[in-house]
Image (cartoon, rainbow over all chains, first blue to last red):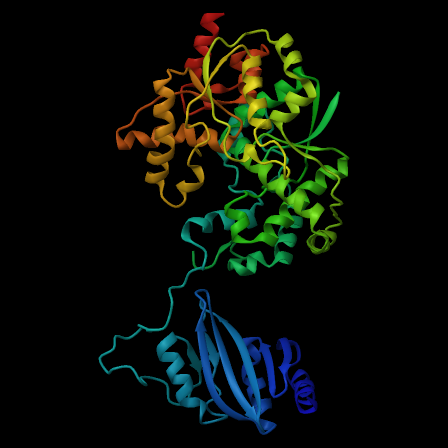
Length: 221
Length: 292
């Protein structure tokens, strides 16, 4: 395990803050997950160390595309993962660093619809010549894995902490009948709502369902 | 005076605020202090939310329970779904130390903690056990001379392991009887109103659940349906509207048990905003007032 531990330490220094997680699940195997922004730097560091590029695996998770780069260093398999959001399906090429990656990147690009920035020879690779442009046979629709009927509930539970936000009409009706415009629910006050937002983030639910915190809605809905 | 933390949930304040209004009036008359839970979230619902993500479901519900615990009060719900979730979450927090630790770690960052000291009660059992049918009968000012179907809903049967699952449904019947109404039963009393199934197949939910029950109630010539749950209430009300597109028309009034109690206890009908209902509840009220 000495070689794995040493290599991992080396990678941690080279990758810096772009490292998301790393592990040595068993002898002869290292797993590293990085942000897409440091994918190229990481590959470069591995190649500099004498690693050999093997191939790329891609998995379409609906909202994101997972790219798994495989490298070999004297019999140790290094799995380098990154998650690319499908809103901007782009990642830097490594084909100029290791020519063996050129076809692997073209294959992933054609089948999944991701583009590799600054690829030396982009374009058609293995699909038939008459294959329609923009159709990627292994790409899934851009949507959450949640059933469509549940997306609204999930979104509302995160956004307001309730199954549905209270409408202006209901607020008026409530006041007309002598009730406060809103009940003392989480959505009635910013500090309460902030507390709920922080809580739901800690549960990882918002990440699981692909909640976009800037837009306050589910991605791919 | 009995004090309870009042858990209003989502549907009542948003969809049928007349139930909130009635509950507050009933509590005043029956000397129950209902303390609002400030900053509460959705319970969240015991079916969909729990299936989506158990950790999120439990974190939200434990946070709600911690709000009641901060007041040192037991928690009372007006909804079967909220009852099921909060009751279930409470049991989990009491029985699973590891889960409790994990959830409390999530809550701790907001300065909250749930120790497991709260009892979760449905309003039906609070009224029945804290006030009592005898006392309610004494306080009835306007006897409900009505023939009513009582739909207990599914989650009212939730009990501690080995408990009497019919306890709360029986108490619900007795509360309705205490108002002076006659309770009629049918073979389909335990059939779900169909609300959860609406997400998957609206037509099936309406025809195979709701319409069967409504046909049964119409056959029994009931004046109305009493529910202890806003979700069932919404299903009975909007469901009757939706069923019209399939050629079925019922027009049976449906109201929450606290609304019935408010009327019976003499709260003026025009102060209960019963016209917010989507079923002909005002007609039922008219019948009550005429009979008086």
